[in-house]
Image (cartoon, rainbow, N blue to C red; front, side, top):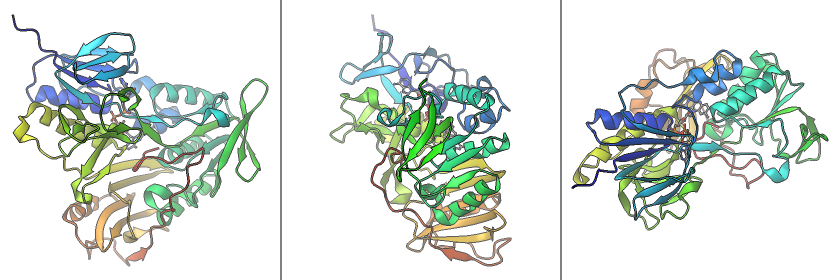
Length: 441
Ligand SMILES: Cc1cc2nc3c(=O)[nH]c(=O)nc-3n(C[C@H](O)[C@H](O)[C@H](O)COP(=O)(O)OP(=O)(O)OC[C@H]3O[C@@H](n4cnc5c(N)ncnc54)[C@H](O)[C@@H]3O)c2cc1C
């Protein structure tokens, strides 16, 4: 008798895991399909957590993602994968059970970087924001009416949280080591617009500020942040928005090229072994994947963007079902959105390495503009603040590698303002350690 096929196992039951599983079914896969998820919930959407959930407009449970295809899957929720044995083609789960696989999709995403325990990270009142449970407990803490909320980190999540909290009327201080928020992702030229929004909202923004440690009261609750210059900020609630690390710890010893920066895969999304070979039976997608991006010279990138999780999962699923001779490269133009201070922000492309930025439509002063990042005269990314109508055209220009600025004579193009983007120089690692290459944290 032929033994039953072990089938496909998807590790990580969130956006990439779900969309990957759906693509497998849509692609005609009819065999056994198992989704393993560390969290006890069916896949849910993270973007609303730092926006509508914090604002109290949406219950955390209302973020569940729609299932677009009948999956006929076995769900193993609430049990994390803890080990991978590639030779035996099995994974071990935290409940001790062992699952066999024929093919594996790694979609374990990322985890919020915690505040270090040695610097007061164990105090109550210090929150991170990555999952549904984080949002539930942070929302409860906000409803309790904190005297002052300190947000450490002016990345996308720190800024979105600050915007939400100001809408709730809460006193907020945001600190960041750089001269402006979003400096690492967008540069200070654009970050200064967000700094102005923060201040106009009534938040206190303290640039160039490093928190060294948190101090607590006798009950173990945070009361203040001690800064690197010895001064202090009093705060009874802290949001540590320090970026994320990839959820790869369980792969230690599995012989894959995996570390807190991601699981390296080839252009076809196949995981690479430590020796560099592509595994024919293990694919990677979403935040956890680190892949060579052809459009940017084949350098390895890993992004924390919703659209990549969806597209890469579908692409990996397609290749999982295809013959070894028909493995197609993943051609993706990274893109994300954010909403904060009433502004809809959208970025296409990668800004890293940009040496110029040109405002090609609108103006920074009006907070409604479209800007193009250039590198050595070539357009590499485009950013819009409430001005996304032409963004698809700029995305095409980036794909084509057009010179910067790529489009002349566009609507609402009174004068093209060009400047240096103002990316901060790399810093030595501090308690607030470095975010990943393109973080939403
Ligand atoms: C608060 C917040 C707001 C965001 N807002 C935006 C936005 O506005 N725009 C945008 O483009 N992007 C945004 N993002 C990013 C976007 O949500 C992510 O890119 C997306 O969730 C990635 O999906 P993923 O499935 O790859 O990873 P994740 O969503 O991180 O999911 C991975 C899943 O794997 C599970 N897992 C981890 N380890 C294991 C294990 N060993 N075994 C089993 N399961 C495991 C995790 O518990 C998790 O459920 C936001 C992210 C956050 C956190």
